Length: 437
Image (cartoon, rainbow, N blue to C red; front, side):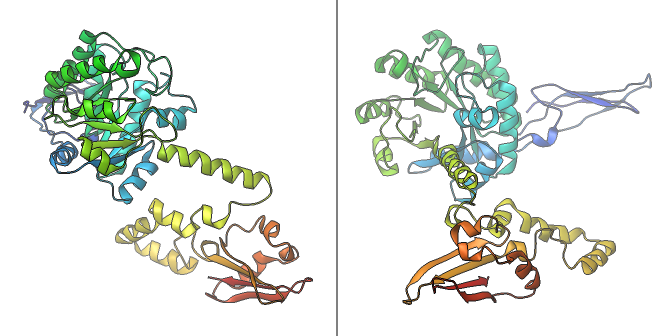
């Protein structure tokens, strides 16, 4: 622990941080006391004070406990706060960030070195603040030489990451499963890891250092194995060879430095590494496994399908998206309203009685319409549910509803739950029923 002292001005104070701190002290996740100074804008005599900044290292501790526990542990890769929350809600014990996916979602660009330290730090801060599970951050090649690596490690500590992945690619770096991979020399690669370990010690943190090499594709398997062993000797907590080409290569890797945990990367959709089950990975000797593209990949396909539907005058089919109520619940609206009640004032209560509800999204448009079509022969032709707030384009599915003012029917049925809005036969003799659920 480092001692902490401060000079406090009588008025108009601004803070400057030292010892690896950033001004936003509430973002700290590590446990240390850091020196900083509050300087007065006036010529008044400063007051001396000693201030201790308590910072939590729970995330790094959680991650180390996971690494020490039996079995292999899965971690899907997120790219923003929402995807990180979904990973946590699904029950995963840890999460990775994917530079590939962040470059795609934040910049709309390929993972070929466009993403800067500042951009990935900012995205990482939003991610780590949104979840309670430990997050291992993709830090590319550290964004420069050994000194830049130290700054990156300290920045990731302050951003709340439990772990950091550092690789040995040259700049500009790129996805390890793409063509033209190049790596720095052995000496420089090892020096980056030594610098990372020094930065961790200097910051007083316990961030987990994951050392990655891309030498398998850039040079050879033997060189990748050599570097992994050297990274472990330099103090890396976890080692990782990206883009291994066979199960035999994966087995050879897991025999290197057997006491140091190994990370696997199951790049979905056609990477260089075979996709194995968690049990197979555990049998080989892996401890943690990342799934880098699942979330960004299905998001891209789902958005493409939705846009195709909209362009065709339809809305996405009900099964392809959650209801509005489910979306609100996922995003925390309901939890927000419950917590908001703790701080309600008499004025709030009066407005609530006048307006009927404090929830701007409540009422008819958060409910579901069930549309059922039964043929003349009694055979059910259609039974679907759509959010009541998404009526445009419904006539593409059920042309017989073209002349019906569904919005007026919904407005008139505001107080009805589970009622039947429509029940008629169309010109073909099919029975069409519309229910409000």
